[in-house]
Image (cartoon, rainbow, N blue to C red; front, side):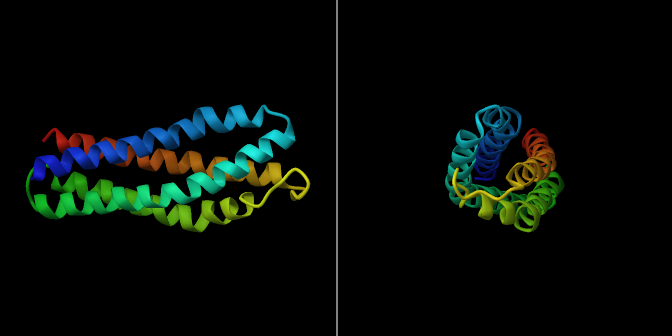
Length: 149
């Protein structure tokens, strides 16, 4: 049971990290090269779609990590799973405090109804997202090492 839980946790968290990494490194830079109206439409749609999916994925990964750490207790990898889970908790707090407020505004942006500083807001979201990606990559690495123990 513990091994299956560990594998599921690593897979679920790993896929989440992959999506967030792709958004940071590929998707948003590509969107930023589009004409402004297209960029706004794509970022707004992304904010709506990923704004519904990612909270479940973040919290689900965190819960899986917490259950794994609890089941493993003082066994091999338990402390790494706990540390990874703590980092995911940090990423959730970062999301709620820094990224969600910008994302909630971005969901409403249209070509005709956009704030004058939309590019600055998008850039701020991207910078916070880079930091969050670093945190979740580290969490994933700790989960992977814990799985190997």
